[in-house]
Picture 1 (tube, one colour):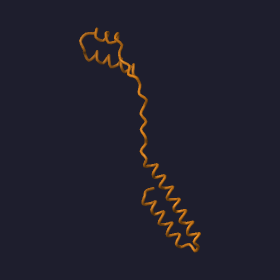
Picture 2 (tube, helix red, strand yellow):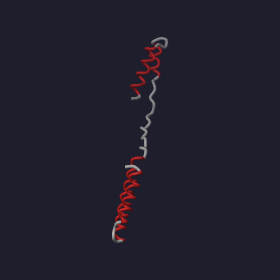
Picture 3 (spheres, rainbow, N blue to C red):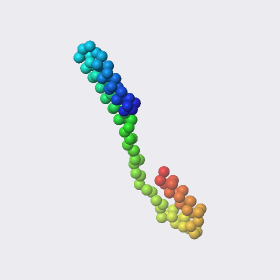
Picture 4 (cartoon, one colour):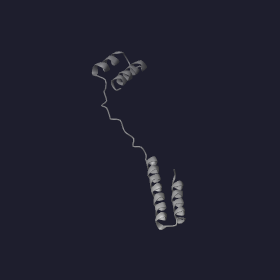
Length: 95
């Protein structure tokens, strides 16, 4: 439901209330129309609220130990293979 439809609910209730023979019937029709419009507005408001993004809890970063770094360094100069090995170790520790 949108704002135009809610306004139409109110207009219809007002027009319908005019046709009633008694003041109490007229007021009741208007009251019911207003209640329907208020409920529709509440529902529209719920739909338009942006969801609150929940941020995952932060975990403590786990780095490589001195021994693990030394093992990678001992393999020789920094090559793609050595860097990928370091990446894999860090991924295993932090997932």
